[in-house]
Length: 307
Image (tube, rainbow, N blue to C red):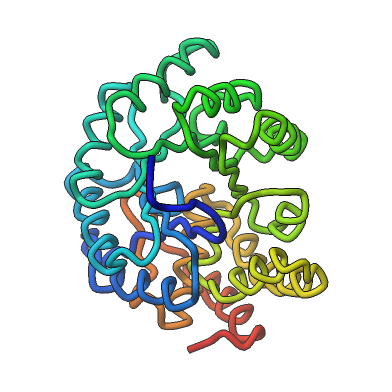
């Protein structure tokens, strides 16, 4: 279905924002180049870290166009089409494909209350309506539905989906998914969204990772993954420990929404490193306060990552 082999470190790209709420395409281009020079194996546009559901469709398409232009074919670009119905996913996905996306990722339907057969038919409809590979995004915190390993492998065997981005937080389910996928002949590329255990997931057979904090520090994740694939697990664990020290930034904000705390912490750290020019957020999210930002900057500086 595609000339690309989906694997390795595929960061979910942060969407830089100007103080007036518009997308900062200059910062986005600089961020994409930073990730590519760091050696990432793919790019994931418009996931949760990219604040996809805070952006207009017009902005989303323009973001894909920018990422594709800067990437210039170096790695596969997977674009997130997160919508409330199969028809709306297909509509947005085809615009993203026209903009240059190599693959599409989508969730189970949002808002609607569907059983597993209906969710399966949703993915079948989307796959039939697009011309590039489709990934399933398992993120029940967003859509309130867990995609079962059995369902995912069945869709893989049918050729409906080529991969899974697992952000379920259910490591037992992830381990079962890997086992079922292997028993079925590996129809799926299976990616973990767990930032802090990528070393372990590589050891047990994950095909890659989609870690948000790679926007802040991509090189360490690439070193981790390459070491794990070479069988050098001591180095992989060492890199993971370093990343986990950095990941403490997301626990600094308190009393804020999950989106404001997580993405806000990434943006504050990225600004401290000079990767983006502003930690501004999409409305109605507010940027982190000065005291919180200073504590995040202290963590970044303490790890030798400041600009």
